[in-house]
Amino acid sequence: MLSVPKRLRDHLEHDRAIETLALRIFLSVVEQALCRACPAAGSDSRIGAVAFIHRFGALLHPHEHFHCLVIEGVFEADPSGVATFHESRAPDQKWLDEVQAKVRRRLLRALTRRDVLEPEDAETRANWAHGGGFSLDASVRIEGADRPGLEHGCCVIALARPSRWSAGVKSTPNTWSTRASSPLRRSTRPAPRPWGRRKHGEKRGSAPASRRPLRLGAAARADR
Image (cartoon, rainbow, N blue to C red; front, side, top):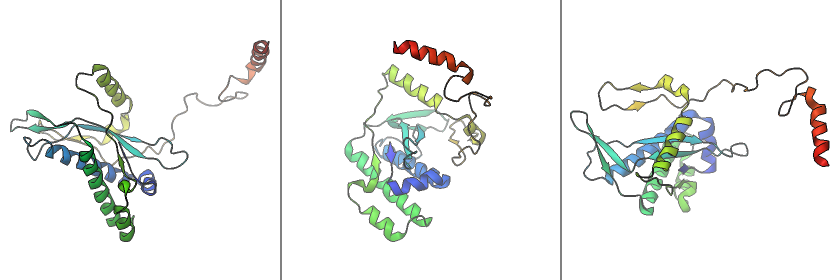
């Protein structure tokens, strides 16, 4: 899980290009770190990961952050297209600190090039202690033999996959394919109301107004 400083969360929340950029930088740094942790793997090895964008608490203030399911290792394809998995060691605190520091440097440089941050501001944030507001956590780990944990993760993936993403998904023609979607988009249409159109005399969030006497009678009997 990666979270960024509060000031940057506002840009992630309202600028889709910056949101996509930050997520790609994060996954790119993780992939590079896992490749280094697997010396036997080739330079063209790839990770397996699923990313979720969370906005819990955003009603009070922007709180966008990334949750990712990442396989501990990389996949390498041979000339025939068959993939070989190279397992890496479990990430320790030193590994996490290196990934966090690199994500911090790359994202601050990218935001400076886009004129989102002033160079002096980016330099100050790069030198802040305690991660400068960037936080990386990898305390949740699912073992390969943990079937309930894996099934729960699969359920989360299935429920969190919006159908509208499939419109921009493309696949390369070779057998060792990479799925790349278009930049992250939010739906501009309002969410459909599950209860349909409001009817005359009906109250939302409660029983219809015509049943009010029944509710009052039930409440009176409960008080006795």
